[in-house]
Amino acid sequence: MQTTDGNTILFHNTMRIIDGHLDGFRHAIAQAVAFAQEYGPQLMVEVFVDEERMLARSFQLYRDSDAIRTHWRLSDPYIRGVMEHCTVQHFEVFGEPDHDIVAALQTPDGASFPFVVLPRLAGFNCLEASGRGKAPSS
Image 1 (tube, one colour):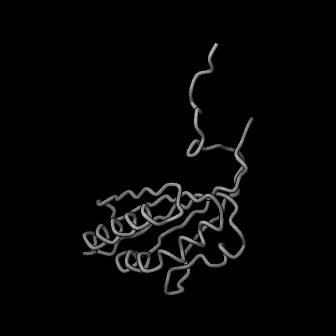
Image 2 (cartoon, rainbow, N blue to C red):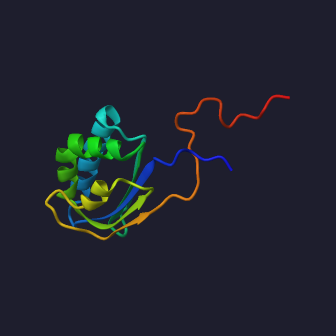
């Protein structure tokens, strides 16, 4: 089995949207994602909203721990804006970030939240590979 070098890290954040804050949350997330798309180091960002349960889930894929540090440094005002409208219900880290990344997992105001770090077993991605997924020529 061929795998990538294993440096990629996937964040999965489950957020509880504060009652009455759905529109504010949507606006803040849209601004944060637009900023990340333009300036952020993420390889992928996706956010999904479950209005019935007032939950949102975001997925962010990073090349490595340095990319996470860069994201936090650049995006702090946008993260704070989002957090005005929600609380972190659970946070999952897939991969093996540096110890300082794990130690820093908290809200912008320093509050802690439940999280788990799951080390990578195997995998691959095609985000930067060209020619993958094509049938071999005979």
